[in-house]
Length: 519
Image (cartoon, rainbow, N blue to C red; front, side, top):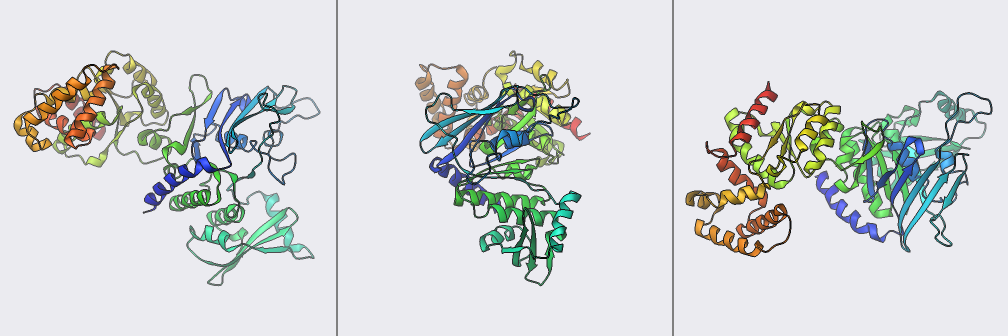
């Protein structure tokens, strides 16, 4: 399975990261294209920058291209003045407004951490500084920056076609085996040869398939051309920063996944750091959560901000997944276990398929208003319910969620007035002998003994009540040789079947919301 291969790669890449001679760990942008105090952190060898249109993905990518002095490049290449030029005509009229700009870069190097700043004064001149670090220089590294677009500009096409009218034939350079192999891992046919025809600054790829077909890239499919171009340019570079804008352009979703697999293998093999931008959920799923960077514009301030890596429900809303399901967003795995137990009771009763309900978690209640705003913005609020822990009843977070969603989402509460683990603990103290034996596989006396011992151990603990409850409950689950969410699910399922249980308000509210969603 390709997913398993990706997961194995993620661990290997994280292990290789500390051994790279250079790693760009973050950028801070202020003033460029209206950005204010935007800090973007790169935690993995392969990072994906995602977000809606006009959220600054390409700006961050081009800023990263200013991080290094590139061996062999011209003095005007890979500098802010070239990547962020101003339109300043000599005559009066339309011109870009110049403002003070700072771009800060943070590096991990074999000699320790390093910081560098590019600064532009209002007069338009760019300068570098190293925060008073004596004898510091901009680090050197190979760089690759491009977009995977087609030849579509008429002038570009005419320029390439002019190569065919030269009296001297263009230089012909065969792609290497490793370059062709990179592309063939993702394409449905085999090449006998691929050539790069060059004349001055113009070049054109020409392919010969094993079946005999011969054609230039003017007749290639968009995806084929993109992959061959990419293979030609990065398959053999080492210790480089690779930056690709809209990496999924022209590629089928399956090929997108294969491309991300190949890029991560290349990063591991050749010591590359790769940063790409995307609108594709397939690309996002192909890197670990720590490698996902989500940019968004705050509706109040209009400023670009970095969102926390969303769980599936929020990510799906942003990036085009089919959302024919009711989405339930809760705080943590204990809450998810309780919700699963309730669903175990109400889904069969309502004759609904289990896959029609999705649960997202690990965001924290304080992030819920931000998520509600995002879901409303992308038209998914009416398919979502927020479920808060019992200790959030009087916190004011419910009103913040409703205001952010403009009263379009229901906000429900788990039973109890504390952390979910506290509620489950209380129910375990009154569970019947038969239920203990059948559901947890031990005798009630043994369960009581374990719980009394843990009560005594944690009685003197100094921490917030919720933190103590969570630690004590994890210890109980370990003693029962069960996962904590599984114990929560068992108890919630038993309680949801009792007519007099304090979980019934949640059961009724979820049942009603599920019925409304179906209609």
